[in-house]
Length: 483
Image (cartoon, rainbow, N blue to C red; front, side, top):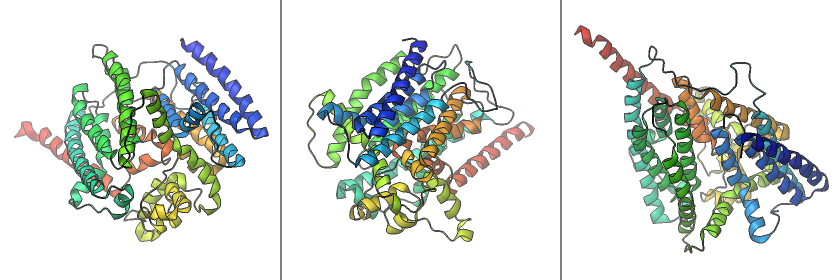
């Protein structure tokens, strides 16, 4: 299908979505509202495919948005021909209105006619210009590789320790409440900075063969986390790798072999059903239930049903709205926590970083997931369990439907700018990669989750250590000929 046809189809679906939503909203027809949501999502997805230069970042974000916020609604209709309605009609109207406002903001934000004042848009080949006069990229790459591998092995050690603890207790709740690592403090701190180290290394644009080792390490850690943590982390990690390979394909020289060619495409397509089966199997294994494979179709439905629960976060946020005490801060949880509770600011603010799954964290903290689940099920919350969050719920409770539209407009513009300019400077490339790595988690997690991947004392200390090592080696090289 040509890009022109994609755009025409997107306009038609968008027009139908507006009419359907208006009728469903004023008649409180939940079936009409759910249909409008899928029409709107389909319109935006086709609109993205019809862009002159396809935005792979937005495409994968929309897929993540669909899986976590819409897939359960679709599965219930396919399996039981029923309209998904776990809450009262007014709450359902609010939930679907939130999704429509989010999609509408992204739809307008992805329009190429709207752009910020700096730079120009248009189809052009982007290139990565390494400023060799300012940075020795090869030296940074070598240092970053060592830090990445060391931090990766530290992460693997912490993950294996938690897997062993889960094997003894068999409870994810006990892991969150009772687990205390016996590993040395340096190992734990190295594990905290793993993602940042990985992104610094990838921002130096290593060769395809060189990335295989670090990505293998990354996938092993993500796969092991499925035993006790979120199963979606592994899938979203694969999304990050595919996006990185696609980006490098656009940046490569004409004589360089493709990063994401036919072999990689076939491998990805073949791997999807196998990964879905694996994720569903682990889901049964974690609750000590026997998994019976009844066909790939039913397994896919099971996968979408289990992963699509984030839409309920919107309903529960509405239900417990009056008990959630920090509505304007939930979407900035990581940023606010760093600003107010780091060792320096703590001297002036007197604030404390509350531990997860505690009453203090639920009542006085700024995490929507923590506060919400405490009011939903206090005993389960204090036992270490949770419900997660969603950036859509965080924005709505603080800033309403207009806020959802505006923030999603900004989010789409950021994704569009990243796609258009890609990587032109080293430091901005690091920040972009950290942002992309966290971006796909947003529909089921916090809005500013990526902040926690580089704004902490531990992260700043590690970056400073890298900078010192870089300066020492570079200075020795500069004076070497004089010796």
